[in-house]
Structure formats: C-alpha cells, structure tokens
Length: 485
Image (cartoon, rainbow, N blue to C red; front, side):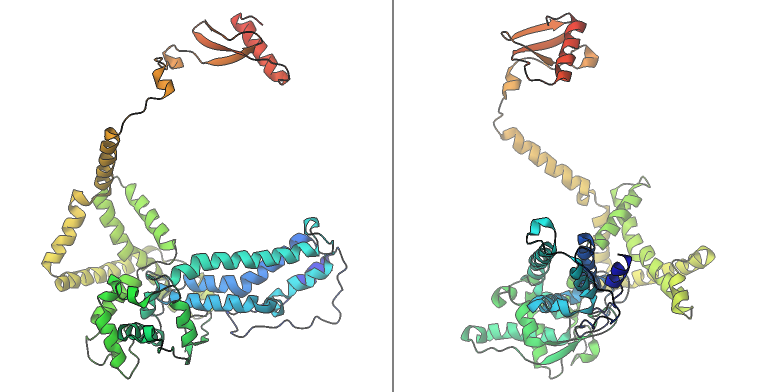
C-alpha cells in the first residue's frame, strides 16, 4: 500500500507558472507497481485531484494577484488592479482550455490522480464511493468552479464600470478599447462596419515567474466588452471627463502609453488621463488584504485613547509613512546579501539600523508633503485640514444623525400594541422579588396557583408518554412546593 501511494505522489509537477505550453503526462516507468482494484483510498484520489488543480491553475494565478504592480513598484495599492481586466481574460481562457475535451487529463500535474484511479473499484453506483463517484465528483467540481468563477470574476471585471480600467493596462489593448468607443461615436458600431484587430501580441507581467502570454487582441476585447454598451460607457463620469484626450491618442502613429510620458507626442498632453488612472484605477483594491490592514491599523490607533480626528490622522500617517518603510527597509537590506537564501532570511530590521533608516524615511516624506502643499495651494490644504478637524465629518456624527432620523420616522408610525403588552401585567425580575414562571401539567382542568412568590401555570394536558426525567422533575417540584401530584 505504501508503495502504491508513493507512486501516486511521485510525479513531476509543472504548471503554467513555469511553462506557458500545456504539459503532457509522461509514460509511467516500466518497473512501476500496478495498482489493484481497492488499493486506493477514495480520499487520496480526491486529495490528489485538488493538489493537481491547485498547482496547475489556482495557486499560480492567486500568487500573481498578490504581486505588486510592475509600474508602481512594491507596497502600492491595488495589487495589479490596473492589469486585472486583461488578467481575468487570461484566467478565463486558460480555465476553458483546460476543461475543453478533458485536456486537463493530459497535464503532468494530474498524473498522480489519474494513476490513483486504477486502484478504485467500479461499483456501478456513485453512492457507493467507487470509480463512478470520483468521476462524477470531478465533473461537478469543474461545473461549480466555472459557475462561481464567471459569477465572481468574469461578471465583475467585465462590468460596465470596471471594464474601462483596461485603459490603464497594456497600451495596445487600451488603444483598441478607445478605438471601439470612437467607432460608436462615429456610428460604425451601429452600421456593423467595425472590426476588431486580429493582431497577436505578447502580454508580459502575467506569469508568476516572469513569463508571458500570446493573445489575439480581438478575442480579448470581445471578452472585455461582453457586458458593456459603448454609448453608456462614454456617459460614465470617469470616461466622460477624459474622453476627448482618449480619442486624440488615436491620431498618434505610435501607441500611447498613458503612464509613460516618453510616448506622448507633446509634454503634458495626457496629464489628465494619467491622473485619472493613478487616482481612480490604481488605488482600487481587488481583494480585501489592504482593507483588513487598515481595519487593524485603526483598531491599534483606538487603543491610544484618542478621539476620531486624531485616530484618522494617525492612521493616515501610519499608512503612508511607517507601513511602506517596513517593506522598503527589508528590500534594502536584502540587496546587501549575495545569495537568494541569505536574502530570504531577512524578515525585518531592528535596533539602531531601523531607527536611523526610519528617520531618513520620515524626512523624505516630510519633504514630499511640503512639495505637495505648494503644488495644491494653501486653500486646498486648508480644506483638507478642515475636513479632518471639523466634527461634522466624523463617523459618529453621521451615525448619530442617521439614528435621529430613524427614531423620528419611527415616532410618526402608528404603534401596534401586542397581546403581551395589553395584558396589563408587568415583569418583576427575580432579584426584585418576582418569581420564575414554570409550567406543569395535570390531567384535569387548567388552573393557576402561586406559592411562595412563585407563579405557576397549570395547563390541561397529560403526562402519558413523557420521558421519565420529565415526570421525576415535575414530581420533585410538587413535593418541594406542596402541590397536588
């Protein structure tokens, strides 16, 4: 049995993270032991399938989503949000290719699972947990995974509000998306004369280990625009504000990268577009890690016994100053190490090294803050300062006003008196001298009796068939309070 398990687990695992082309399963070794029916535990086969799927598909894409934006560097907001519209297309494409015609069975990462099936008996009924069960379970897994993937990934990232984020991604895809908007403006979409580009391009920064994908621009854009109307997209405030500059970029013979000023025909020509990308797209987190970090940060500030204004300001300072320094100080120290193993040993900086570096980091932030004040002007600075200082903007103020409005609306409603409220009796707690309402049963008419300050309701019923402990408990009460048995 041990040998069989070792054969099932001892297979090379290659994933799309390391190799862009699908890996085929190599032929088993000549001296490999043959599994007999019943040798493989059903749980082992399920585990091997999950491991194969995770290694080939889930883990590489998940790791990629956690990486920093290549344009803005490490420890910045978004975690590739700017590129995730096109990345969701790659994820969808790879998932469908893997499921098409059961091609996943040819991948080497699934070889241990396929091998384990030789040890499962055919029991002719999925309820018996044999080969029929595991085959059905795999079909259900792929079906449910694809359903949830389309619901939570595809529908969201191709929605009319999120799909325009493509203009902050690959410049070639951004240009094609803008060409689609221009075709709508000129009536080519309505006339049916617009055609997507069929050029095949290479997308970088979408592989965990630095690889690339080759895609058709037209196929990608059909995916991106599947849930969008060009007319409505152009009316979105985010796009409407920069639409003229976006359309002007089509006049340039060179593909314009809105984040790379060296590709702009004139200096400052697309400053507004770049500003919108940096302020509207890049800060949009595509997962909850940043949000949870901020929640923990605010919780830490609350423990210092300061009020909302100071908590908010301290949280902002921590987020833009101290938190980035933790990552940057580690990266700087790792650069001083020569080998990869030594670099990985550096987890943090301590002592005088940390304090000295932090001091220089704070001075740099203060200098940038002074430059920002000069750039936005004193009036804007005073507005920001007043926003944090003014109690009208406090969360507690907003919540209190909301509660007052809800209370006022409730007062205007007609009050409904419940049956319990119409009884006229008040509840007297035990500590004040009241009793505990208990119920016991008698075969005769219903009665009510109060003994020693304890109000007992005697209900017409019968104890026949009741558990013995119920009868014993009732008899004990009767003896204690001198009640008729």
